[in-house]
Length: 507
Image (cartoon, rainbow, N blue to C red):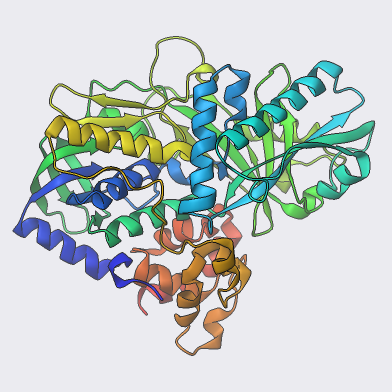
């Protein structure tokens, strides 16, 4: 069953906009429906505040859908001596995996292969790092039933986990475990729908053209109508675009690129291949197996100069770099022809005035402008909840709003339940991993038509497209193929599902 209060669709969007025209006042306006904005909307709404969450495009339109899909415990921050950030990451990972979204996050083995030329110092540093990761896991309260402890493994076990790894001089590997999202865009969607279930008005295709600490001018991009909205507090969660609305916010966007590879090109790996970047002690390229039979290999960390694009394009230099690093660990060399697609996301890093983008801290910042606007920037996907909570804390304190304490550390998202509950859902495992307890409601969208349960591409069915239109706020084919299903990452997959997507919108 799907709780109708959590359902987002074109009809509800129209009603919510009309309600704001009739009474243009809310406690909290959140601008930007990425992971931080959707998280802030949920945090505020679950405290009993009236909330409007708006975005000029769609849910998860920006950086939040371009991640590595990892919910990681912060090992790279340990290498930089950033122990507080690492511990925060481990705690937030535990919350996602065990309490709020266990249906969307699974344990993923991360393999660092050890070859004859790896060098003792590199092996020792890696093993010490993974052991410290175990300490972080224990400190966060995450048991080995959720994330197993790290270990050293032999040559044959290494080959079984990643059959495509180079055999020349292979001794074995070091395995640690981290969290992997089924889909980062689906996490954003679950946050927004859960916020809607707590009364938040979630309105996409609604641009904030002007804002200050107590008001905003909004424009419906579908009709062109404008609305002057009054708010007790305004939270700017627009990521790399934050400075467009609040000019005193200065960011240094950094581009992270991934390439999409066929799983069979790496021997259908069961673990993520972790490959050190030559010349760096704390940068790695990850080849991450996905549930749909693809592998995402990334990522880069390059500064971006000039105007921020609406949809970043991955340059060929990034693609070539990733191929080179991945090939350094493989038995069979991949070529550009093996790359099925590529994507790039921009990290909204706070401008600290020095250092390259790879060295800029990933710690988030909650900034209050002179006019009272609260801007949340920096951070990373894993710690979205902490950043969202702090933004709402600032809104409540600065504007003296009457609100209860944050509840999001224990508040399950739509579809969430424990392992036993998920195992009892009578639906294909692929659907349970994407929808949790709502998987049976997705099956019901077939309306008795068996063709609606037939896979179009990568297992995605017409029933899922219908569910996205009726309950997940999809308004056009791009919403369906680029964000609700991610078929747009590979052009042939998108084309295979386009006709069904058009049909679902009119169904």
